[in-house]
Image (cartoon, helix red, strand yellow):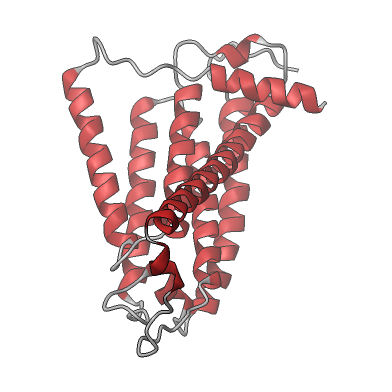
Length: 259
């Protein structure tokens, strides 16, 4: 069973259409570049204060990238995953599972890379300037350590909403309706984040709002987390049902073998 699951996950990945550089419509290419620029700019403006942490932007970016991969797998001309005799329910399950697996694997790789990079920098610094590591920091500088657990939990909920809702949208066959759904979901999501950031207090040891720290010290943080948790559960269940309905109940001409 596990081997079958892994094999089908690999088949889904192999079904992703390649990025074509030559012969691509120039207007479409410019629109894609403009979209990426706007996405990066808006994301940084929300999550970046005086500094930015991978815990803040990492799950967000990886979730969006995973949905982008799923969209390229489902909506291309060579859907290899539909050539094997499995049920549509099994395909839907694997697609949602793949969206989660993509994020988990990418997050582990990112953390390992960061640890190796930081360890290398510290090791080189110690070899070049060993006296700098033997000096203790000045006693006059005092930093307040803020527990960012609440902010990290919020980012986990946001990542789950992006994964499940975004994956459900990729099942929409009409490109115009799918793009409009992505646009509407993005506008609503960013709007909620901008409103939330507007109510956040200034973070300790900073002159600006730091997303994780500022949210964690908000008086309303617990209430927001409860509401977000309920919303996340509802959206995840509704998204799975939507994907099931679009692909299993109303496939619209798919060549998938139904069991």
